[in-house]
Length: 482
Image 1: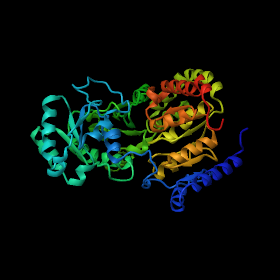
Image 2: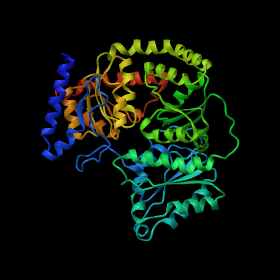
Image 3: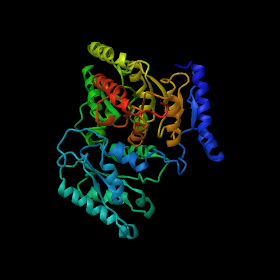
Image 4: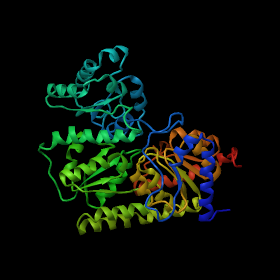
């Protein structure tokens, strides 16, 4: 039996109190600030965020290195990204998030390759600057078609004081002005991978934009746009780019997914920056608006309702030809979307979903679920900031359970009590909930599927949600509440 809104709010508040009672008093007081039930009309979600996780809670967060290397810089395909430090961090990041790219790996594209300075004990004692120089020399010899190098510093680099800036400047001059970018993204910085995004954005601003501002050869048009914060997981950016080009825009850059150094250099010359993942790229978007006068707009290409709204918002920044193009693209795909909804909505109507993801997904995916008649009953960010939660208020319904940097205990308890039909989270949570008998989709990298962006992606998204929830395998195991 479904609950009323007021009954849902009461249950959620009681549930929060129940999980807090399991903690020591001091810890419970701190965690209480991160849990809440959303009240319609509120200007924020009522939770604290971007605060250091408490040791021992097994947080799902990553580090600043992960935010820089794994998210912002790593997918730039024609640059070599050195994990400067011990091999462990680099090995972790080698298994990329399926950031698809065009190119020949090892020749002119390096996205799925792992380069590390492989620190040993003597490098910690005597410093790794000479080793870093040697690594760069080897890269230039073995991979002469690389367009640039980034140095992604791991924890020991900041602790022992390696001067990666000096090494980068020296080798850039030696390599005839080759772009080499030092990135101070040591993992211990900040409270999560979010600071790594910010540091990476600042490195782009200082080491790419400044060096590229006078480069000739770019011919502008009135319809130039850049896609920022789409990492092309499973081909997402390609699905988005198709729609933008169909409506008459010219995409001069997309990064980081399938992105190149030249595209990054050209971005400040765009007429409009299109920002998909607000958390990871809002810093550099704001910088380009302030310094180069390039406005930016956040868009959402999950599900036909949000896609149509976003296409019209993007078109509003251009002339009538682009506005007409947006309507033409929406109309072109309307029958396709109606067919997807007609097929899957009867199978998914009313199904409850709980989300816990990073980046933009805890709010952006909600519209796609709603297009299928599904209900998001709980959502939260791994490393969101207050402005992420403020933006989330536009997408969630009255009574939605909100949780920031949720602990493993809290998440399991919430799922057990609320009894969703599906959980959408990351690979670290996937097998916990599947073993509990709860259908699950890995919503960081689409569980080896995708794309999920764009009109083409919505059909794949709908199929995958149906496949997860309505699989007969769940008849062979039981959730705890059953």
